[in-house]
Image 1 (cartoon, rainbow, N blue to C red):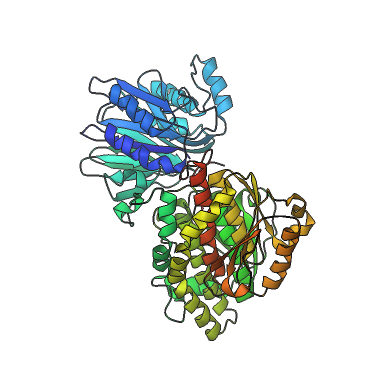
Image 2: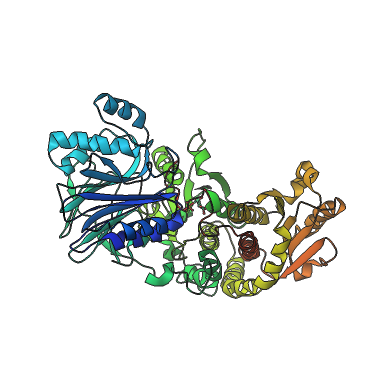
Length: 610
Ligand code: G6P
């Protein structure tokens, strides 16, 4: 989704802006641009459709240099991807802005501004904001007051950065519903929608709160809260290693991130489990009190994180004996719900900035839920800051749009949470010890699953010329099948649908023929025999089966049935291990098809608009 970078310095900042945009590429975008105040006092603006490299090539030929600048990657919402719609937007030739988010009342503002003589060159909601600030500037005489007056008239979600050619020593920024961080340098300051963008220049950040307005100068930063009162926002250091956002020896970020899973799963367990127990206090002060009285869990998430929640529901109901509901945030937030007493509201999000998930959380807080727990991968994100209790997944920055290591570390965190919750609800010490032992075996088992990479690459060839596929699973393996199908459709653009295997004969069986590969995850659990009957149903219709199965499952390779043996795993942790071959399968299919694996078309990593 859209990305913002900005800098106020003594040195030329165009290289910092370009590198920042490159680091935001993973979020998904369709055009890029920058505006820099040059030493002659003019603003030079460059905008290109397509990749940041196209913008870099352009500014190589048409220098865009100066010590004050803003830049942007755009993911189209209002108006097609085009140079005219790309940011920065300007009002006249003295004021430039970049914007993330959506202005809901832009049509009425646009009409009013047109009536006053402003001319629009784009279809965007952002240009409305540029002219509105310009209009207020005429009254206020300075940018800070102009922005303050303009945002009072906006409805919607936004992070804005504004520069004015007549005020060369600062940027004015604000946030309402879209993330914005300030990077603290020495004698210079930066801003970005994501701290990753600024890692080459600083590791110290201030996070703006909702409603904050800030004045960013070389030598300092002033911040005001929504009420206009001056506030301090603490400086925090970036936690992950600087190089973790590099591709290293891997061809794609996605592959690198798949291979990082043994390491990050270990990191996510560190300090949270002993040999035989979950350390409840490691889940945060107050965790014990909070978990003791939970009678119902409501999980909210989107995309891959939603699938993690679906798996957790099986665990929570089986191990803790507590009712659990799971819903995608965009549905949950727009319907009436019945809230059970003592319900824990649990949001799962890699980025912690997904607009629908945050909106659902804010609604839940107003509705009076017992407490809000977040499972999240980005320290300092809005979700982390707004939740009562947080379990951080230590996956490190995830760059590939298709989520991999964030998903498995979410699952590990959810299982740790489930064990802590279950202990208050009669889970025996022996059962807890058994599952903790299974958790501790995960890094090794995932290494074993990764060793199947070559065989999976071979299998993937069978998908090259297919247009559709089915993914089947039962029990907690059903959401794993859903995640496998999501991965395949996201990056290879093959239509993939997941079904609980028992539902096959209620519809999808009608689709099965030799052109419809059927992928199945079959660990050796109590549902295996039932699953085998479902596989027979597919074979009888000529469907080609790709089965990821336990060695003990006694499924034999034969014409039309490809069996890949997965090392034996505990039934509870099986969803985590069985995710790996499905990630690798979709990766290899996408590579064979030549798609943009890390930045699939039309998708964004961090969906900060509704
Ligand atoms: C986008 C991403 C997915 C992600 C989903 C939810 O669709 O492409 O990978 O699962 O958003 O994001 P979150 O950051 O809330 O987990």
